[in-house]
Image 1 (cartoon, rainbow, N blue to C red):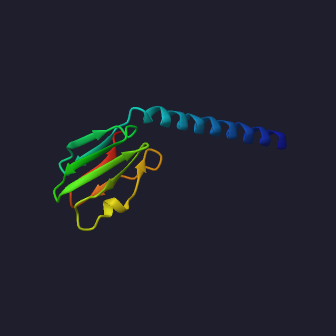
Image 2: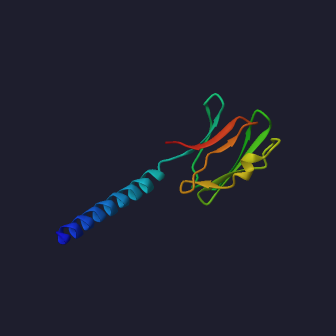
Image 3: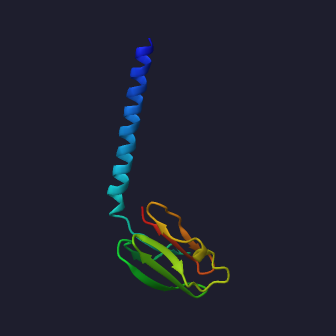
Length: 114
């Protein structure tokens, strides 16, 4: 009876490991096709960029200028014209550590296109 329990545990652990590997594989497979979007309050895409290409973008928001720095597969809001600068305080975002960047005064959202 105890032998059967050991086999069941090994089978379950093996299936769990295979499922985890499949999830990781498909996550990285789909990452190559994803774009990062900057969306305004009307849900219109105002900018689409590939985070694998280092760049610096300047957008006009409802309150003023909104700058996005893209470097080494990560992106962040920087030098933003808004009263509280919460979007700048959010720091870097990436596929692995994804946090949408939201600037309410400028009415802009930086999100991953799924």
